[in-house]
Length: 421
Image 1 (spheres, rainbow, N blue to C red):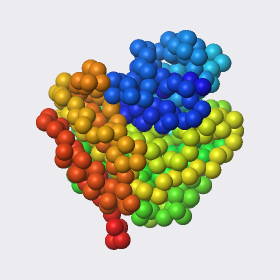
Image 2: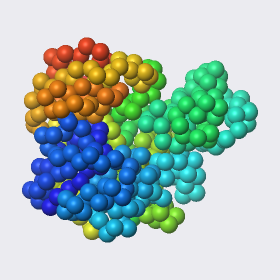
Image 3: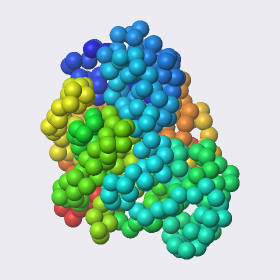
Image 4: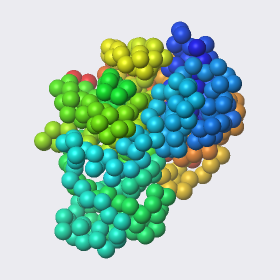
């Protein structure tokens, strides 16, 4: 069959690659994709948020299954158009994607259905929000309500940080999300990402991973879209992940069914492991990026077959490589703030699914002369018998690259280094 992947980042690169190695897939298309994906897919010059044009392209190229990557495409209703046209799509419709598109919607739903999360309040008025912070004190978490490419969250440790973050959302609309803010209790604990393949009440959990949102080593600096990730997370027990599935992921999918917004696609729960158990920081309505790049290469199953089974209402048993995978993002200097474009993109790492792989995100040009066009430019992954060995290998590879004009974290995976490693 033919498959279409919608999007152009590193998440879509790993999806296109994983689908391209399926025995039942003849051809993979990406729309719009990027030239770094040319080894696994054919690019279509179609906007990722134009549902009508994407559906027309899917028909033209005899596409049997479409997988939508970016959250903006979901909130633009691309999956709705595909459903209306009778096209098979693995992605949530717009009303279900609100679980990511509106943090206030997600928090209110969690409250109604008893899904564990931080205490919160929602404001559109600056003075009332300031009064709430005065009452609750700091640290406190300030979140823009809508989509902000991972940058709309501030963990305010001081009053001035909280006030600046409030002004950014409510007065300046710095993230283009509208003047609505969610203020949350700050939760102490380690953060974990848990995703599931969902179709209504059917939920198939994926392997866990740990993302690194802050831009600098030691989780310092502002939030980004993610500077790297690793999987599995060996120091978090299976019992904790089972609890997270039973108390969070499955109830959230069932709640959306009850709400009249049944979810199909990838439901992502960003969790913090508190003394009282796992609690939700955020829900996303798609594969995490960079989490997808360290989870999908560990999946031993045929992704195309798995997605079709889930769409048929079945619950496939998934198997995972025992090896760990660590992925490090190479970002343009200045990211997540202002950054230079047009940097030379390193490409001298052989793409080896058993060893190291480079997934491209913010790039343009052609496959021979890639240039940077975004803040997060690429992600390099390496396997290892343990997290420690995978980490050592990926950083050895990073040091061989010509990275003038780039920066990257040097501690991806550090929390997963156990005494036995």
